[in-house]
Image (cartoon, rainbow, N blue to C red; front, side):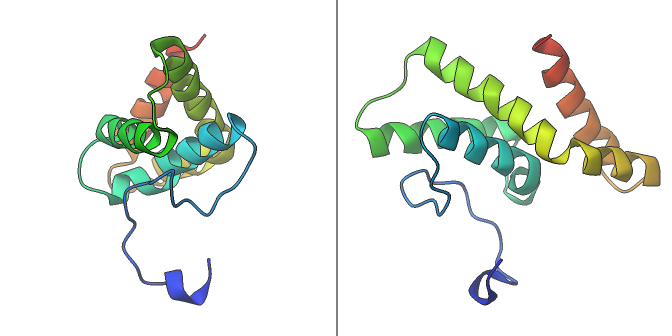
Length: 116
């Protein structure tokens, strides 16, 4: 995080202006996974709302929307990526009994279990 970013509220993810630049589709998947794991709880609405906003912004940036199968694969990959990056921190928060930890943990476990 650079100095300009410190103290700012998280903003909804916008694939057109994202700083994360990885080859697609890994870039989209990793970026959305990071957003779900780190920023989604800081932005009004649910993670599903964030996913829908991301899809709309991505479609706008690309000039077309991904078909259902490609979008499903992107979201599933994002859940796997987000879990791989930060599920350990969700487990520590749950163990420590921090506020909202149970809901966080349950969201991730439910979505990861659905992928098995």
